[in-house]
Structures are given as C-alpha cells and as structure tokens.
Length: 226
Image (cartoon, rainbow, N blue to C red):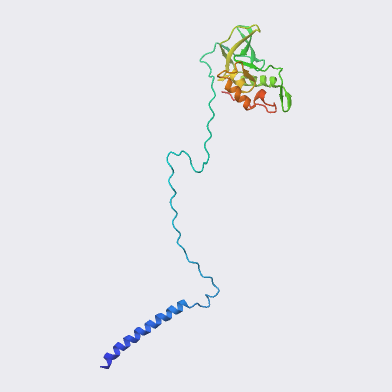
C-alpha cells in the first residue's frame, strides 16, 4: 500500500518542482543584469507599409511630367528656288562687280548681268552701325565672290540689254539661287517688297541683323557649298 501512495506523491512533487523552475527562469529573463544597466532600450521595429504603385499615365495626353512645358512650335519653312533642269546660258568665268551684278562674256561680247528681282548694294556704299560707318558694299561683293569662287554660273530668262547696258537674269551657282542668297545674307532687298520668294528672306535677315542691317563688327560665316 505504501508504494502505491508514494508513486503519486513523487509525481506531484516533480511537477511542482518543474513549475517553480519555470517561474525562476522567467524571473531571470525579466530581471536585468549588470550588463543591461546604461544600455538604451532598442526601439521597436515598425513594419513599413508597401509603397503604392504609381498611377498609370493618361493616354492621349501627349506630355510627360518631366517636360512641364509645351514643345516649341517649329518655324515655318522658307520657300526654295531649286535650279532648272537646263540653263539658257552657262558662264564658266565671271567677275563680281557688286552685290547684284557680275561681268562675263557671251558670244565673244562682254555682258553685265544684273541679278533678277533684287536691288543690291553698290561697291562704294557704306552703312552706319554701332561701331561707326563701315564698307558694307565691299563686304557684300566679297560675300558673293566667295560663294561663286571658280565655279560656273548658270542663268535663265536673260533679258535684252537695257539702257544701262545690263541684262537681268535669274542665276544659280550649284544649287544656290544668287538673288535669294544675297537677300538672305542682308546684302540686297527685293525689288518688289511683296515678292513671295524673296520677301520672307528679307524679313528674316532684318530680324537677325544680317549684312547691311548689322553693325559690321562680325563677318558673316562662309556659305556652305551645295
């Protein structure tokens, strides 16, 4: 009978001891040690919410947030004067006289050609600028001579000589129309202010202060061969 009573008693004592041992471990874990004094408590780690996906771009808006400004509208294209398929006359050698004329030989006779549709500066003309008076006429002749160089000049619509002994003609060197070139550089003006081909170039030259409309302090860039 004694062993039967002792068995449950021993089991109860063992359970009580294990329970008290667990409480002692909890107290030891909660009780700070000497190493814990002076140590700042660790801040709690907060779970950050996931970033939301950016909204999709609006279709058909045609602009981005980075741009912020509307695109600049392109300038309207200026009219062109392409060379004809063939020329009435081709002058292999010319001498530039001023901003609107050159001398050449045709049928073994001297001929002075006045570029059609323009009134150019005379060689002796001078212009007033911020740096004083400057030889715009001489500069204009040099610009036309630089464009032509050693190349031949082709012309169409060569008119009969007038009372001044000159013939008006529409002329090209390479792909460049000479009348249009001189107006675009600011060295000549359209004979007709409403000329649909030349007037836009004259307005652009004035706005940009090219040629005679400038002050003469800057030399115009060399014309690109075309």
